[in-house]
Length: 178
Image 1 (tube, helix red, strand yellow):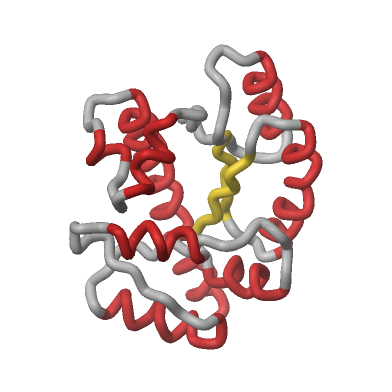
Image 2: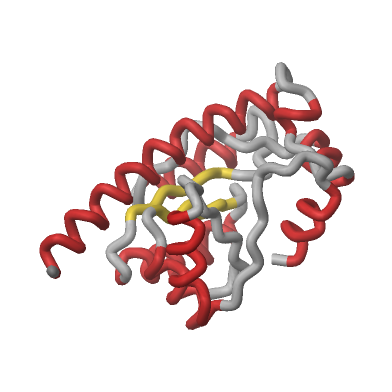
């Protein structure tokens, strides 16, 4: 995704590392990153379902599906869930760009929970997120004690646990197929 690359190019900090990769090189690149000592690789994909998205999902230990609390986004999420389920991958939803104290956010979480796990952390629509993009920082770097930083910390704890569960499941899957 070009927006992620633009953010990273503005960063002064050397971490996280950024690795651009063509789809046909993805498997090899992930293996090389693992051998180089990287514990996690995050792949930012466009929202449209394409064959390239299917290939990325097939490589995933865990798929995080960001969903805005809007009727349009909730209707569109079904094809993503179907894709991830077909690939037998662990996934969860995260509600993003939510308005504080909105009934629609609660309704969206309830609707999503009928189709899978919903991250307990809601990413609210805050200026901090856009402001951090200007100079390549994260919300934890901009205001470590702010509400946005707390949301990201909570989300990371949830995602990290899910990724590790997904890795264990894939290892078991690999042993069965060996």
